[in-house]
Length: 226
Ligand code: SAH
Ligand code: DHB
Ligand code: MG
Image: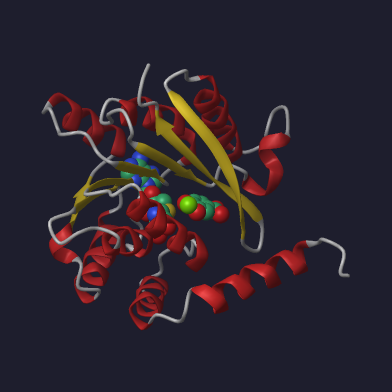
């Protein structure tokens, strides 16, 4: 038997993808369009996209909030999990990313279920809270890692008992194991994990995610009873 190593982990990820996540032309085009427009290739993997889709379905989500749109790859997975009258509100700071995403979402046939809001996520979230935005069923945090704790604080103000809160990139190839990680993203992720773990109103786990590097998706639910 092969020893556990990165190469085997990537092979297992591909095995799962080939078995359960067949090639999808719309999603492949999404990534190609994003790449041609010069966007960074930091979208979730196909298997993580499928996981987001399944979690949204399992939660029976109708209202989804995404923080960090990029080219709309994860947005497409989330939108596909919703009923016809569902809605994903996705927040993006970069106007160019938002435009690429909008075209991709339109081509994917989910534009009627998605609203892209452009601005600094913290500002947009504060405005949503002030305006009494209805609570979301599922929230996916995937923008600048340094702001993750603030995104959790604000997300909780847009949640209800039972809301599912997910955060991407919370393992950073194990850098979060360092006492003092040497980059902003790992420091932000580590702070998020500790903050999440310390909140009495959340029940949480982190699922390791295999890509070229090891990363992770945190999964929390706002407790049903206090
Ligand atoms: N969820 C996407 C990937 C998001 S990458 C996917 O998996 O397909 C992170 C995105 O967050 C980038 O597009 C970046 O421009 C955006 N971002 C970074 N800082 C932000 C901020 N302060 N407010 C809103 N979006 C931000
Ligand atoms: C990176 C990966 C991500 O999924 C993301 O949202 C941002 C950055 C990265 O690997 O740098
Ligand atoms: Mg990410």
